[in-house]
Image (cartoon, rainbow, N blue to C red; front, top):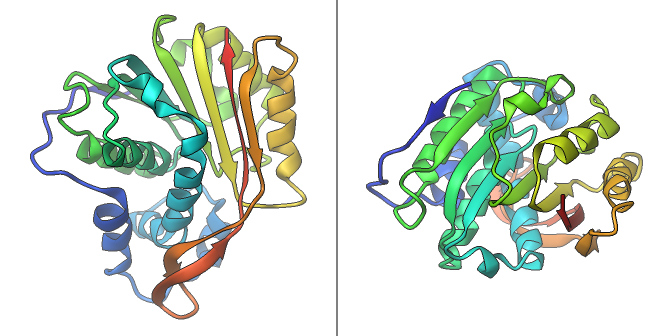
Length: 263
């Protein structure tokens, strides 16, 4: 586990221009089969760059479409923990910070926990998050990295305070069928007391959407589940379209659930 307190950012970094587009400009023709259509545990810098180029725009727009349903104004000035599950290169955390910057919302980010089995993707995510942290956030924010598969996690991998708001990000991970949802549910129940906002976004897959629904239903047995939101509405936004090699407006399929629970 790496724990760091980043220095105050010298320049304002934004996800879409500085991380997403900058990677695409350096790459030749891309084939998603090389990274198993985004499901592969990444092993090289080249694979990481390819993933961002092919899917970074999708992450960005799906999350930007989801975040308004969580009224992040309530986090202004409050202590917040961000937990990014199966984070890859921490794109979801970077997009959340980008969104907070754009909306001029300034929570006190106490910690950011990145969970990912690929050590190279995790290290890059750590670096991207350091770039994204702005002076408007807490200068003492801790970045914690956990280099494990989700099924191998336990409560000792996390440091959390019951008084902090917890924001859990599941971006393009719950539809992956390589881990036990019930075990993940129990881990969250046992590790994160207090106020939890859980945001789940994925591509639209008729065959695998049931996993997001099943995950939500496990929590829904609690009477304290509130502010639940669901959407499967496609959006049309600008992304890099590999077939033309250009940025253009494309249809982005998505499946989303988010909810709040006090544990």
